[in-house]
Every structure is written in structure tokens, then in C-alpha cells.
Length: 157
Image (cartoon, rainbow, N blue to C red; front, side, top):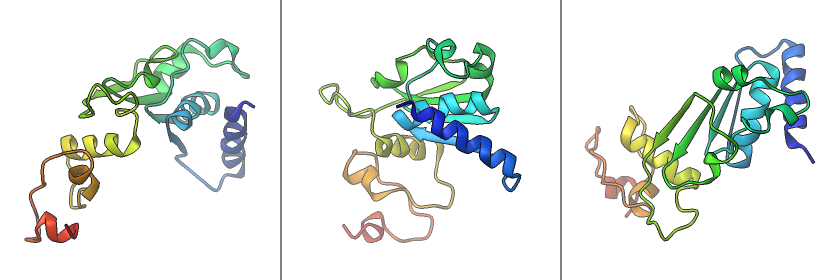
């Protein structure tokens, strides 16, 4: 089963319907790989989080996608030590990020939760709270409160 065929057909249907503007396709892991194929096939942005890349198999897809479309319409977030997004040939638009998982955890850097925590920790969360799991599960530092409530209070620790 080629899941990308279904997502590509769905995005094409949305485009033909005309109800939606600014369509973007996103996903994590296999879903990210599908987004990185569907985006170029439909002319929309495809964003992957730890998604396998499509550069090497682009000509085998139906319809095939060009190297240029992969280089301009896709973006993949690639955590260090995560081997999944390194498969398939990386396109030009990607962001390497750190990963706090121990080297002994084979898939420790492949979790969407850890990636989200890394992004929140490095890029900031604006006025939104940082996930409690970032501290309790992944060992990120306790964030500074913007409203006077302690992290322990907010997370009921």
C-alpha cells in the first residue's frame, strides 16, 4: 500500500474544492515521509518531523517528483542520533536539532515528544507553558515562570 497516494489524492481534492487556502502537510516518522512526498506532488509545503526523505526514490513515485520540488517544498526536522530522517537522501531544507537521549536508547531521539521539548527549550514557547514531560520525562531544565506559578504547581508535582 502506498499511503502517499491517498494523502496526495486528498490534498488534490481539497485544492479542487477551493474551500481551503494555504494547505500544508505535516507528519512525524512515516507520516513525515508521506508529507515530504505529498507536498511536492501537490505543490504545497510538506513538513516532516523525523521523516524519512524521498530524494533517492523521487523518480519511482507516481507521479514522480523533481529534485527542485523536494528542495523547495519540503522541510524536515532531524534530531541528532535519529537514523530515520537520514534515510532516503536529505533535501536542501532541513534543520538539525540536538537530542538529550542517551546513546543507549536506539529510538530515543525519534520520539515526537522529545523533539517538541527540544524545540520548546531552544526556540521558546512564547506565552504557552512548556510541557511538564519535558522536565519529568526528558530532563530539561525547569522553565522560568512568567505568571508567578511554580513549575511544580503547574504540573502538580
